[in-house]
Structure formats: structure tokens, C-alpha cells
Image 1 (cartoon, protein in one colour):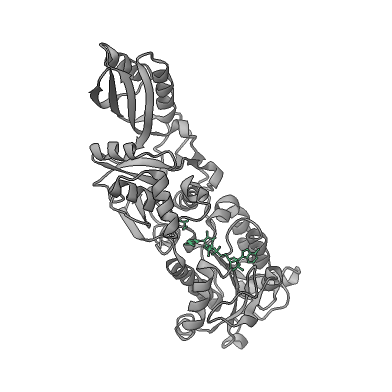
Image 2 (image 1 turned 135 degrees about the horizontal axis):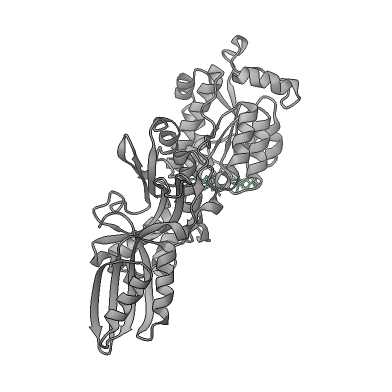
Length: 461
Ligand code: NDP
Ligand code: HSE
């Protein structure tokens, strides 16, 4: 079915007003009308590019784009270079206009973004959004609405800013079998951890610096606690494994508890601490229940030789492993108005071209419907630091606890400090459930004064 057919059906059942079909011959020169929702960090750059690059965009799309309205909260605020007559606070009226072909949503958050996108899709407009929070919470409803109206829903800017990663997963690699996607997908936390690594500074002072430099927001919760990365991980896992994964399915830990001691401990084993998003496809289960996926976001020690270890500052990178292509690395600026606008503009040109041809791009693909494993079932390696009494037999008692829980030790390092010693243990792969039980039992040992840190180790050291 083409957009035109779908529109005719939609008009017949009252979903869309009588609007000129974009692919009919009579419309050959008609501009495609664009509504922009939001004109902040990202939206203002998008608006500027739509206006400044009008001639090139027309040449690339085959039709001119016409910006017909910009919805904001404060319509009377000065917005240099943009016609004040375009601004409105009535976003609902803007997306309901019968002549709007393309809607760009860069307001962010759940509401009113969700209602506005649903209204735009129901009205027959194609939508470009950068809204990872909404896609991770309620992507299914948005994709169904796009499917119903046979229009496009594109979202390259929702994950890793300027880095092309959605289209590679959704299109370029769709003939391959992706087995893992590992990403540094939050610039703010990567800046903080990188700075802690290079300067030796603590978390609180580095967060303050990130805020001063404008990387971290006044309320940095979504970044620091891993919610932003978890939303992006849900989107990546859904695309990679053809399975619907929501933000609530993602196991999440933030970086607020990472200490300069953790960073130094990582250094001692040739690792660096990063906030990583890990999306993994399991092997076939022995019980015949098939393959499952695991999706998690947490700080981890990764070897300094790993491709993600060198990703510094506020940069992002996504490392994809697939059966046929092998290992692929995508790297670049993951945030900021201009880089994010680049991704939005790429989507805008694509959906506009589709519109002109009366076509639609790929929709949601969730046919595999794999089970999402609970964190307890996930296996990885761990780095533990313990403060113990420096007395005979402690090492044996500690090793016994690991053995009782089936957690195999790879290396142990002990450093005496008077009557106390620090024990650093790196394990072989173990399940998260077994490791948690081990830590609980260690805390009950009389000779263990404290388990000072537990961190996962990802990648081959
Ligand atoms: P901003 O907060 O800078 O801008 C939000 C815009 O939305 C503002 O123009 C604001 O109006 C407008 N707005 C807010 N509420 C409403 C409302 N109820 N009705 C109409 N307009 C409203 O956000 P960003 O540009 O930073 O982010 C936009 C989206 O892009 C988010 O989904 C974000 O997650 C995503 N994104 C952002 C990145 C970044 O680096 N900033 C990177 C990747 C994705 P007003 O101007 O009047 O306040
Ligand atoms: N707050 C996000 C980050 C913006 O720091 O990466 C990009 O999504």
C-alpha cells in the first residue's frame, strides 16, 4: 500500500481531512509542509538548517520544504533568524493542520510529546523524533499508529546524537544476525568518568565541573542514574534483536557510587571504568526455551585495549558484533544541538523523499519476541575489593565462600596495612545471582570488615 492509498483509506474513515496527496502529479511542485515541535537546543538548530539549506534540501528531496509552524512554551521569546510569525503555543492545533506532511518532535519527555506524535501520525503526517525517553516507554503505541496510517516514524537522533546507528541496525545490518551491541551512549557520564580517570578527582567535584561546562543539566539524575542510557539501550536492543524491549526491561545502575578508588583499581588491572549499555543475545538455552536477550546499563571495568576504552570526553560509541559482518564500531558526538540536528535532518530528508515517492520506510520489527533475561541470570566477571583482618586463614575462608557459591576466582591480590589487609578478587564468569549471594555471605564472615566495591568486568582482559 502506498502513502496515497493509505491516505485515501484514512480520509474515507475520517482519520485525515481531505488533504492533497503528496505523490499525485498535480502536487509535483507543492512544498512539503513541516511542523516543528520544540525550538530549544536541538530544535533551534533544526529550524536554522531547514531555513539556511532550503535550496540544497529541495534538490536532495525533489520538492521544497516549507516550515509552517514551530510550537514552543514561550512564543514571544526572541529566536534569532526565525520568523516570529511561525511560533505558536498551540502544538495540538499545529499537528492537526490538514496540510502538514512532516512533523519533527524535539520537545522531549513523555507528555505532551506522546499525544502530539500520536495526533500527527493519525493525521497522516510522517514523524521524526529525537525522543528516546518516549520511544523506550511507549514506542509500541507510536509504531502501531505509524503502521495504521502507513506513514514514517524515524528516530536516528534518539540514540548517540550524530552517530548513525539506528539506520545501520534497522536497515544496513537487517540481513545479518546481531549478537551484541555494547555502547557508551551517554556523553555526560562518559565525560565524568573520563575526567575522574585522567585527573584522579572524585565524582562530586567532576559532576560540578560537567555542570559548569554545560554537559550535565542542573538536574543530572537522568544521566547520572543511567535512565538516559537505559532508554537508549532499550531502543538498540529492540532493533538489534527484533524484540520489543522497553526501558523497564533494562537493568540499570548509575555512576554516583563510582569512587576514585574504583578507577584506580581498574587501572591496576589494565582497565578503565565506563558506563556501558550492554545488549546481548544468548546462545540456545539447554532447556529448549530458545535464545533470550539481556539488556543492562551499569558502570563496568573494560580493558584499555577494548575499542570502547579510548572513547573520551562527552563522545559516544557503539560497538556492534554480528555473525557475518563481525565487529563494527560507530563513534562520534553523542549530544549537542548541532550534532543532534544533523541526525534529525538526515531523517527529515529520508521521510520527505519517501513522501515524494509515495513510499514508507521500515516499521517496527518484533517478530522474534525473545524473552528478556532477569539480571540474576546474566553471567559476567567481577572485580571485588574487600577489607579483611590480616590474620592466618582469611584467604582460605574467603576462597571457600566463593567456591561454595560456584564462583571461580581468576586472580587474588592481597596488600597488608597493619592489622588489616585489602583483598582484590577478579572472578571468572559467574551469574549475577551467584555473585550477589557470594557478596552477602562474605559480609557475614567475621574476618571480612567490609566489601568496599563490586564492579562488573566486561570484555576480555
Ligand atoms: P530543550 O529543553 O532545549 O528544548 C525543548 C523545547 O521544547 C523548547 O523549545 C521548549 O519551548 C519546547 N517545549 C517544552 N514543552 C513544550 C510544550 N508543552 N509545548 C510546546 N513546546 C514545548 O530540549 P533539547 O533540544 O535538548 O531536547 C529535545 C529532544 O532531543 C529531547 O527528546 C532530547 O532527549 C533529545 N536529544 C537531545 C540532545 C541534546 O544534546 N540536547 C541529544 C539527543 C537527543 P521553549 O523554548 O519556549 O522553552
Ligand atoms: N544527556 C544526554 C547525554 C544527551 O549526556 O548523552 C544526549 O542524549
